[in-house]
Length: 357
Image (cartoon, rainbow, N blue to C red; front, side):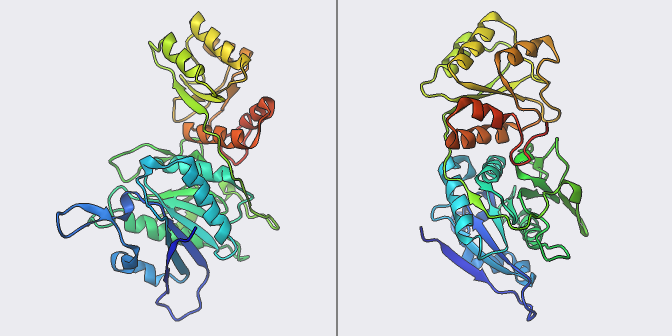
């Protein structure tokens, strides 16, 4: 597939210190008001310097690439995740780092999905976006984009990238992508990572939390996976959930796995019909992945009587994984592995730093 690209030459006459490929997928960040009608329309990246003049003062090469049809992030899907991974694979040797401009609503899903697809990643892939369009005076887009670019281009004393994983940068914090959740719809501090510390904090200086950043690995070759299987579903527990709803989901034709969002430390109702439905699904090789509805803490199956049965029948504990990372992990694993037992083993352990054990 051919993509439109725009190259930005730094103003400084000094030699450039690296190269960043910026991939625009759509979303609030890339919107401006058109003069006629005062409506928000997609931004023309030919005018990027006009809208964000600070970019020209950075000391590294920047190339902008836009998807052929930018989308609202609510329309994000596995096919686009695979396309993004393919773009990174194609350009991996040409650029030192990658920044993805993305709508906020599904950014945590995309970051999680890409973390699984990009095995042995040894360069930064940083997603960012904005709560207000770039064409609005108070927009957070400019700061988010500029700092994401600086983080992507950052190198240590040995000349290696400081960041070598998929991250989200938003409102002064760099977070591990598959540990992140969108928590605010009307606040600039939109993303949080309750179970894993920020990788960096951008104040007057950028402070890196080095013990929590995946280290650079010599002689690692990127391996990009090519498949997702979306025969998965969520069941979120709530008081009064009906037998008909649960059984309808668990009896979907072709269903392979369910992320079960439980209470607290992994607890669910002990109604006989519910226990029978879960047990019956597992007997049919449908994998049930237990994830807490709480943003912080973790699943501890068997700690309470209300989770003891889940552990006994073979529900897989997701520990402290987010729901976004859990559902995309299922899609990734089902896309590469057909043996249910191997799928269970992979779900139960961290594969890209997405959970603690």
